[in-house]
Length: 411
Ligand SMILES: Nc1ncnc2c1ncn2[C@@H]1O[C@H](COP(=O)(O)OP(=O)(O)O)[C@@H](O)[C@H]1O
Ligand SMILES: [Mg+2]
Image: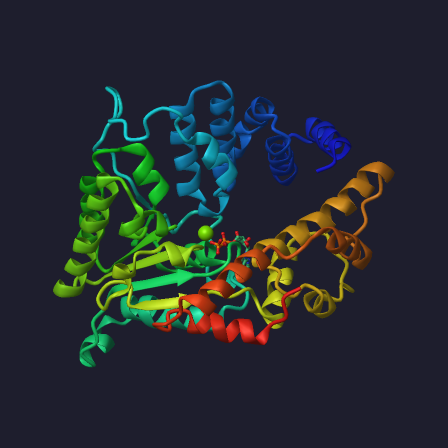
């Protein structure tokens, strides 16, 4: 965000302190500008809104700036639990301890604290499958493997189909894996447990197997349930590549838990997501573990149009935006890229409104201008994937990707 725009927004907020949308923009803008303390000062009113996660995130940034890394980590984990889409890899990297990462918890930290919370169905910012653009084949899998079994277990029983198992989603970043999982949680309610491996790994070194077991136990106790493990590569990293005995033990523990589900028909579904499938231990893909592996490609033309419109909802946008044409010109854009495009076009119009004192709708021109500054972020991933497809697809794991790559033009 242009610094002048940010200053203007801050002034506007001082005049209309109850404007939540404006406050969100200010806090996000300040965070992006690295002004963590000010962001945290502006954030508290958001605790009462649907943007609680952002308020907590601002506190995490401020804590890190103040040098309290442990506190920052805890707050960050809390923010991500509230809203997984707030994941910020850059910030996560800064949370890494510079000392021994395998430290044991110090006094005052509770190693038995639960590592995951169910996502509450009554949260006002809950999203559902209707908020997810495109992704039809994936949604169908989610319905068949997750939603219907929970809603109509007798039908599955009648056909002798067991409920549960594992689904692994993989694909370029920003294409909706976490978002889709969140939407599934929105449909299912309290029986959806989220865990980020970052969290388990970082927080309770030395206790991870115990934590992992506890997590599966909790989910089992509430079966049927879904356990969502984001960035599963952190856990399932190829055992040959990991040095630490500690992680190796943990991976084994994870495999034990997965096999337990398969053997006992426990009505527990483990949903995993990763941007780096080539780092996932092949052992995780055996039958009974993640036996359904789904490629989540960048959105196609229709999906892009849908996603653009979804993100434009509730904004002051002209009704003559050529959505189809924008979708045509944004090949290989991820869902996150498209969301950024709408964001940028809106910022342009907002800046103009603040300058002129007249509020007008976001115009097609705002979109054209914004589109010029953005590039698809999936290309790098697709290039990498192409190597894997070419050189290490002997077992056909990446057939879906190969098929996809043969259909697109990479610039
Ligand atoms: N199919 C989609 N429909 C609507 N928004 C999407 C879609 N895919 C991605 N997005 C937007 O992009 C953001 C990032 O997506 P995310 O699920 O975090 O990507 P991934 O987990 O695959 O890296 C989401 O928070 C959402 O705003
Ligand atoms: Mg993700």
